[in-house]
Image (cartoon, rainbow, N blue to C red; front, side, top):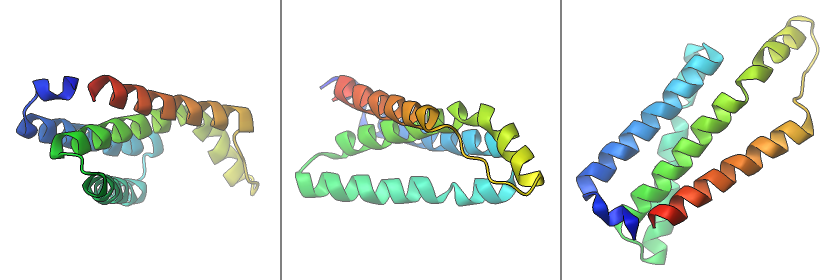
Length: 125
């Protein structure tokens, strides 16, 4: 496991950094205080899910922190990847219409995000 090169305390710092990166990505993408506050739910829900699942599977604390960090970083990158679609969404909302990003774009972003998270987790674990 490559993740053993860092101590548990260092992995906690990485986890906090990736959570902060997600909050920053949401804040600078949406430029909305309410969205930033709502984005606090993602790290909390992710922590509960990862720690619960790793506890059931017998993973250690470091493995859980690696999985959590990889997932938060992947979601932050997904939010930043969707940033170019926001002006179109805002323009459609002002016109009273709904805008949906093309399915191929959202599918591609989703696949790349999952592939990134899985790759990072496997490289580190």
